[in-house]
Length: 407
Ligand SMILES: Nc1ncnc2c1ncn2[C@@H]1O[C@H](COP(=O)(O)OP(=O)(O)O)[C@@H](O)[C@H]1O
Ligand SMILES: [Mg+2]
Image 1 (cartoon, rainbow, N blue to C red):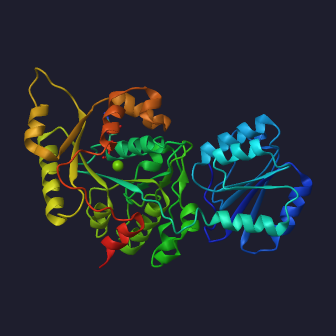
Image 2 (cartoon, rainbow, N blue to C red):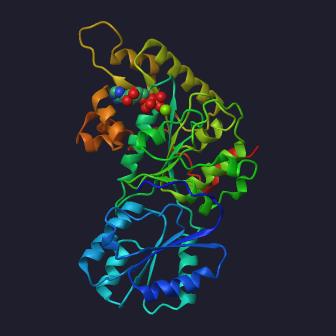
Image 3 (cartoon, protein in one colour):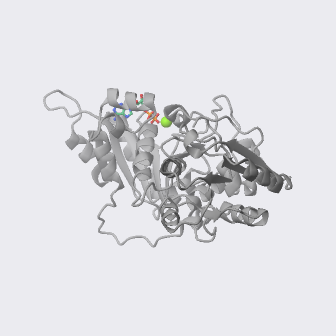
């Protein structure tokens, strides 16, 4: 789904309706054209006619007029639901009410369904209700994973992307909603690695962070075909202006409330908002390389963070692009363990060809080479570490960043 940037990311409600029924189209146009706040887009045809996917960029709600009696249409809907993941919500309009169809729609996790004839009021109400999301009050307890570089080019972006992909596919029933946030506003590489258009418009929220609500967040997400949501801004390599910390807080707050898993790709430079990101994280990984300066920088960073935020997450060091050297001179695993002690988490093998191919194709490593050793190591990172220390009292996700931001 490659889509252009919406011309004006305002807080308009964008309703996308797919229908092959001219009568329904007419009714929908009459219903939605009344509201100036509604931006209606009608796509004609049956769902199975759009095997390449629907253009749902910026959509608040998607209404699918479905011929549920045709299996090919049900399968097309199933595929669409997998593709779009968590957002936008989908309302299905069917010809007849059928218990079996109803059950399958529930399993596909459509937001709601109505049967024809649908009154305009009913349709508008249904769309408005599902657009609010699953009762905004019950925020998800998101798990936050942060990757921080100890040296340049250590592989933070690569590991952050692979972790996000694994988390995305870790759901027990289908995909788990996952958002990867590229906080390297100056030299972010996530959009390039995933072949996505960055959609985060910082000017739009600079100075007015409260404007960033769920709807605007949706406009500012990029969607990877896998279902991964990405927050990334166009690079500003020559810009010296610093970002309003409140904007970053608000952004973190929004993503952590609306996704099951959030992965942060942090830059090496320390900003006024960096502490908050680290404090809000459940897992904090420092990525380094197998050189003496690499180990030294990692150790310094671990110490600095532990000093600065003793209550924060324990930094764990990942040595990326690790080569097992049996007989040649140079650093060995024992040296890493000695230098880093308890904060050494794991070594990730060096496999440039594999990583390169995954980046070039914009797919997870597992898709290029199932069962590869890099993915196996990253999977281990996601399993909670057995710790002798009592677990910290969990802080509700929606409070995490607010708490840490209190200035
Ligand atoms: N495990 C690995 N094996 C081989 N090459 C890797 C590995 N991880 C990352 N790379 C390569 O290292 C380079 C830097 O990776 P990147 O993720 O962009 O680092 P960073 O975000 O820390 O700057 C890229 O060319 C990437 O392909
Ligand atoms: Mg990077």
